[in-house]
Each structure stands twice: as structure tokens, then as C-alpha cells.
Length: 211
Image (cartoon, rainbow, N blue to C red):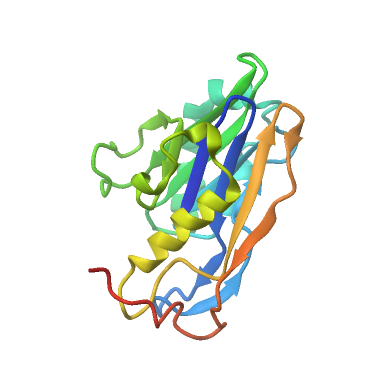
């Protein structure tokens, strides 16, 4: 599982995610740490997938014929149909996508979210929503003025989400990764925070239960 943050600003877009990779049959056991903010090759765009790790490989694959982010948006229905097909062939697991990119047609960034489950209030399974900001944590933890958003704010949001997990562990961990998307392109994905989690152990086992 992943935790995600996306924020649209006037001239840039922030995407953030934790980096924890967890054991499929031992919930909460950390088996690796990796960036999960994934630039889409050849496009001024990136995404974060929540659910099966294989989505990080399959979503770029179904975007291979796309020439730019505006084309991706225009063909998104067909692209997501192909993505769902290859995901179903690979693994049966609910997934979410947070997709961000720079629209040359509009001259601004755009951020879109889709969930393939019914577990979010107000979110219809399979529908695509364009949003100004999104987090799988507490939206109230985001700055009230999004124009002031910095990566450190995203670290706070994700760390707070981690603290709200169960006492026996968390599915948010390892590290936090960040990238910006501007008219010039997708920045390098960088690590902006690390937790003291250990490979092979339950992630955040010392995290207290939420009150």
C-alpha cells in the first residue's frame, strides 16, 4: 500500500508518496524501500499508484503510444481500460492512481485521481476526478492556502497519516519521495524524509494507536 499527496499550484505540481514495499502475506512487514512517484517516459507527467506494486510497471506500459500529457488526458478512458485489463491479468487487487502532468493546451498543471474500489466516501469506483489537491491522509493536514505548499508540508501530512495507523504497525513507511512537475518537465524524484524502519520487521511497530 502507498500513501499519496498531490498539490496543484499556479506554475507547478507536487507529487509525493511513501516508499514502503510490504510482504504480500505478512501485513506490515517491510521488504523494501523504493520511489513510488513514477515519471511517465517521454511525457511531462508522473503518477503514484496505490495497491499492487506491478501497477508501477503496467501504467507506463499502456501509455507507450501517447505523445504528450494532453493526449493522455484525451485518451484516458481507453488507456485506463487497457490498464485495468493488464492489471486483472497480473493481480486481483484494488488500486488507485494519482496522475499529474503539465498541460501545454491549458498552460498549467493538472491532477487526476481514480480509485477502483468503493472504499472512499464520495468517490465512485472507476470515475476520474480532477482535483486541486489530494491526499490519502487527512486533507485538513494540508495548508489552507495551497499556494504556500512545500515538500515539508507533504512530509507532515504523510507522517500524520502514519501515526494514525494501528498500534501493531503501519502500511506507510521507509521513506518519503517527492517530485515537481513544471512547464520545463518532471524534476528528479528525491527522498525528502526517512523513517527508522527496518527491512524484515513490522513497519512502525512502535506507532501508538490513534486516539
